[in-house]
Image 1 (cartoon, rainbow, N blue to C red):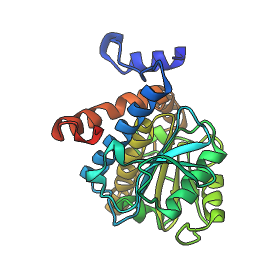
Image 2: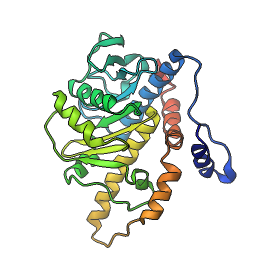
Image 3: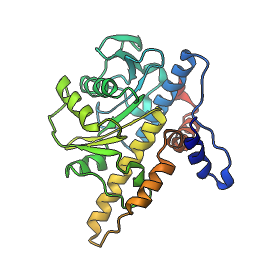
Length: 271
């Protein structure tokens, strides 16, 4: 783990008490199983948060052994029923190669996720759903303002896709979404569509999605109040981003959500 990441984690705890970082594994098989369990856990969290909308929405995780392949959820399974064994492994060219080969995947989901994975080798996980407040804010085709401490996790790290092209069943729409995300951003607001977040772990991407959705809700509430808004200064926003928006810290941020879901479901999503 990088020194800066260790410092950031230490700063988040009283008197610098150590916090658990991203685990390391001795084999690709162990890491793959861990990824699939956390992927399924993230879906359960999303279900509890109300992000399900019919057959829309997907999470993907790059395979630890094959960087040209990723795992994605099957079409037509509710987020709240998702299990590790349900996931399907598909190459960037669309060939199903492992996992739940009897299942099918969302065509639009494949176009979006394959394009982002292809364009961003640094990205290992992607989350996209049609959450309520994300869809509402997306209608304005505007970035979020830094109006509170938490939204600063996206300070100069989120973009807006302003060229809505309908359901992303064609490769060109996925490619345009990937391009709008940019080379380093953590998230993109998709006009008239929803939200998309990325991370080095599924935990990071999932926590960022939950935070982005709530940040859209906060922005809508603040805008509707009719009072003067006070925006966090660039200096303080940059400091907040540096301290709290590292991959390691964002991984840690998601663990209480994961642990709660694990307790509530007796870990059934790990099967």
